Image 1 (cartoon, rainbow, N blue to C red):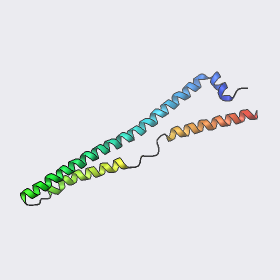
Image 2 (image 1 turned 30 degrees about the vertical axis):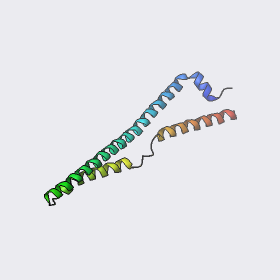
Image 3 (image 1 turned 90 degrees about the horizontal axis):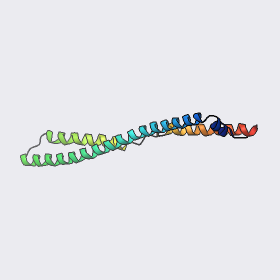
Image 4 (image 1 turned 90 degrees about the vertical axis):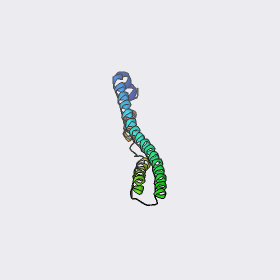
Length: 127
């Protein structure tokens, strides 16, 4: 006597093909979600690095202008400060921990399928 999975595969191959197609769609969806999070973190890291370099350049210009004119003006702090704030926010976004939801639905589906196969095998052995 054949295991129930073999009789299903032999009797209804369209069910197996549909199940495989659903797995492929689930993998595509999960990979897309994980990819979006990764791209967002990469972009935030690049913007943070660029803003930090810009802030360093603006700080240098502000110091030179302050020394050249012999006076202090609030704009000499505000302009580089904005670049530093942007760099800090982007660095925080880039360094956040990666959410643990990646491929959780796929794992749950595989576990459910394996559990169903074990139950079918146990019922098959009892008969």
